[in-house]
Each structure stands twice: as C-alpha cells, then as structure tokens.
Image: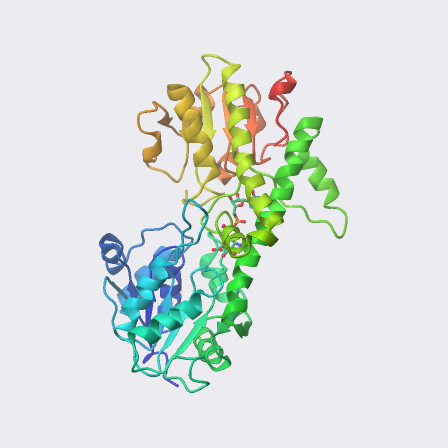
Amino acid sequence: MVSDAELNVVVMGLGYIGLPTAAVIARTGARVLGVDVTESVVETVNSGRVHIEEVDLDGLVSGVVARGTLRAASVVAPADVFVIAVPTPFADDHQPNIGYVLQAATSIAAVLKAGDTVILESTSPVGTTEQVRDLLATLRPDLRVPGRTGEQADIAIAYCPERVLPGRILVELIDNDRVIGGITPRCARKALTFYRRFVRGACVTTTARAAEMTKLTENAFRDVNIAFANELSLVADTLGVDVWEVIRLANRHPRVNILSPGPGVGGHCIAVDPWFLVAADPEHTPLIRTARLVNDGKTDHVIEKAAAMIEAMPGISAACLGLAFKADIDDFRESPALKIASALAARFGPRIRIVEPYADALPAVFEGTGARLTDIDAAIETCGIMIVLVDHDLFRSIPLQERASTTVLDTRGIWPDQPAALPDARLRLAS
Ligand code: SAJ
C-alpha cells in the first residue's frame, strides 16, 4: 500500500463538504488536489483562504496549503483516489439532477488508470454509483470496471455518503461512523482502506445501493420527525397551548423524543433529499411526501402570522432576526428564514429591518423592497415587533428587560420568558 506521503488524492468540488474533506485528507500528509469549476474558489484556496464559514476550517486550510499538501485547480490531474463531492440539486418537479456527478466522472475518466479508486460522496438517488460505473466503462473501454467482469476489475468504485453537520464538520468528518458501499465487496474494502487514514469512527461496508439509500433515509427520518413537531406547533397554536412546554413535558417519557418546531426546514440536505426517495417510488412514500409538505407549509404559516401581526400595528417597524437556515452558520441555502423575511419585505418594504450577523449585505432578493440590514442593538431600539427566525447565539443572549415591551413572534422558542403581548387570539403564536 502507498504511504500517506505518496498518496495522491483528487477531490472534485470544493464546497461545504469537498473543501473540509480535502483539507482533512491533506493533513494526513497525502497530496491533495481540489478541483472546482469556479475560478475564484480555486484562487481563494490556493492563497490559503476559505470561501465558506466553518469552525476552524480557515486555520486548517491555510496550514495544509502552506505545507504544500493541498492545492486547487480547475482541471483534474491523475491521482490514486478520486472523491466526488459536487452538488446534486433537484429540479422544480422534485426530480433529482445528477448532471454534476456525471460531469465530474467524465473529467475523471480522462485521467483514470488501473489501480485507481473512485468514490462518490454526493447525496444521490439510488443507482447513481452504478451510473457512474457505466459512464466510466463507456468512456474508458480499455479499463475493466467492477461488477461487469466479476471481481476482476482494474479500478474500484464506491459510494460513501458524507454525514457531517454544518458547524461541526471538521469534528464529524473524523469521528462519525462511515457507511461504505462498494459496487463489489472488493471495491468497498479498497475504499475502506482509504477512509481508515483519517476516520476514527467505525467504517461499515455494504453495497453501493444500500449506502445510497441509507443516506437518503437518514435525512428523511429527520424531516419526518421535524414535521411531527411542526404539526404539533400548529395544533398547539389553535388550542392556545405552549408547544415548547408540551414537547418538554412529553420528552420526559423514556421512549419519546420530539424534535423542535421552527419556521420550516432549510439547508441543502433535509429539505431536498427526501424528494429523492419520493421520486424513486411515489406510490409508496405518502408519509415522506407529506412531511415535506408539512415543513414547507409551516413556512407559509409563519409568513401569514407575521404579516397579520405587522398589519395590526401600523407604522411600527418589524425586525426579522436571522436569515440563515439554522443557528450560528452563514449558509442561506433553502432557508425558511430567508423566504419569510423576503416575503415580509416584499409586502411591508421599509418597515422591515433584517438582523443577520452572518451577512455583510442583504441578499439580492431584498433589492428594491426598501427593507434594510441593521444590527441587533439598533433593532432593539427602533423595532416594536421582533420576528425570531433563527436561533443564533446573539439573539438568545438578549435578556427579557431589553424586549419586554416588544411584540414578539418567536418561531424557535428561544425566549420562553417572553410575555404574551397579543390579547387578540388571531395573533397568538405558540411557535
Ligand atoms: N430543524 C428544526 N427542528 C429540529 C432540528 C432541525 O426545525 O429539531 C431545522 C433546522 O433549523 C434547519 C433544518 O432543520 O433548517 C436542518 O438542520 P439540521 O441541523 O437538522 O441538519 P443539516 O441540514 O444541517 O444537516 C443534515 C444532517 N442530517 C441529519 O442529522 C440526519 C447531517 O448529518 C447531514 O450530513 C446533512 O444533513 C447532509 O449533508 O445531508
């Protein structure tokens, strides 16, 4: 086996997963080339800086770039292991789009040689790794691909989903267990040897198809459970009960563990991946589909609640606290907070102030609305209404005395001591 210093790794895609993965592998001493189609990303990484916010990532990247074990480029080069970490978005009809994965595989095909390993990490519909294998077989008829020629293959192909939590990526990349699905058992073992270089968690092998479905299952599980909490929040709202208290009390039961309601589900994973399962078998996925609709519906519900509150208090400014899809990160992808704040800005224009410690400027969607970005201190001074959309630490830390006279819509349950300001039952909001 090649030693770390001799191992050459290519990571395709330098995004939220690809860049931390490339940096962690480079820290082991392997020579890593990160490939990205965006020129500015390549330049940023090569200068030892990062284009995404993630705890400790800046220090790690500057270190491995300075040591010469990580560099970036826009074209692929020969290597021993290729890791594909590109996006797999879905189209408007919720059908998954694996175009970037196939593009990455096409680039890899040009430099592939016998003995190489190709690993797909992108969240993908079941069968994608086999499609990658078929594409490589077509593009490189000179190489024997696995699963088509018995165990006799020149290259190994596996699926190993990333399963890290934004904000804890560098820790979870090392500590989490990994599911490694090979096109053949031999492929799985080859990929396992690679992950063992930097993963401390257990590495469990299976088939590529099972590993693909495992990843989708994890995120659908979470989505369904959050939908349950969000549905409860609506019922509690109707009944005039505090949903947070009910959940706290119910969770004292040893076999009950209800998640937290919120303004909807965001991010590039949980709000997206369940659709891959639904698209694969629409007839047998009513629960997963409904959970998606419940979570998206919760966002619309919050928009209506907030709009009613703002309408009921003419002339008063309203602060939307947070745009990110969850606490203490700078990621606005699929963010329900962004959707709610921009809908309110479109309706109420200059009466809306946005507070987002992770933004230097408002995203383009606010252009022309008259809504303004402001800091939390100014919002406390000038806004009679506060709509909590993200549970950033900065917002949690505001003591009651600074918000006691403010009308609050707290979608994250961060201020349990907030007095109910609205006598009108129409405007009461439990979540
Ligand atoms: N949310 C709630 N209530 C909760 C928990 C979360 O409303 O009780 C919301 C969050 O505010 C956010 C969304 O759900 O809008 C998703 O947040 P998250 O922290 O649950 O998950 P992600 O999207 O940051 O990361 C998930 C993780 N998957 C699981 O926990 C099963 C992560 O491990 C995956 O690697 C990641 O998706 C991914 O890339 O697939």
